[in-house]
Length: 185
Ligand SMILES: Cc1cc2nc3c(=O)[nH]c(=O)nc-3n(C[C@H](O)[C@H](O)[C@H](O)COP(=O)(O)O)c2cc1C
Image (cartoon, rainbow, N blue to C red):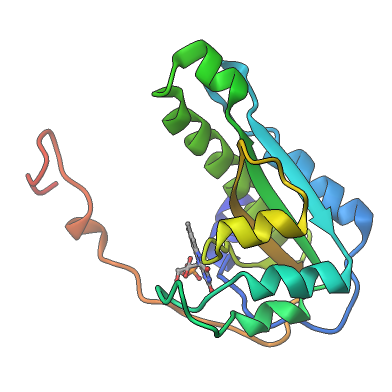
């Protein structure tokens, strides 16, 4: 699929069909992730995928809706997802090379990888939604993630179950400046 088509088609999908996703597709999505640019080519990304319903439910128990971090409610729609991919950051190489400041680069690296994965998902006819509304400590416990590794986000992936959102987007002219910040293009 052409990039422009994929960019236009991509939406955060929050309803999935009861249909399996192949392991091959999951690995293709991760392979797209690791093609992202990365500061110093240090590749701080680490990925965990799971098809395990029990683990998916435990992961969802760590999520919360909106900004209600301490809510007992979860993003329950994610329970329908047949597979999750977690995107983690191992800061060790980046901090060794760039110091504490390098952490910022590692976050950018893994974010770039996540976006590649999101776009690959669409390319494969699948759907996803970038999720960062979770209590990280709880999520890490489900997947035995070491304390010095961060889970930045996860992607629930499945076939679109008939959810077609059309979120409003700010006008380009309110976002783009020419020559100086605030100077209209
Ligand atoms: C860093 C980040 C965190 C997000 N976390 C969540 C989340 O926890 N739950 C959710 O439903 N959507 C989440 N989203 C998806 C956004 O809500 C979505 O991208 C936004 O509403 C725009 O819609 P669109 O992706 O369809 O263009 C997140 C997106 C990003 C980039």
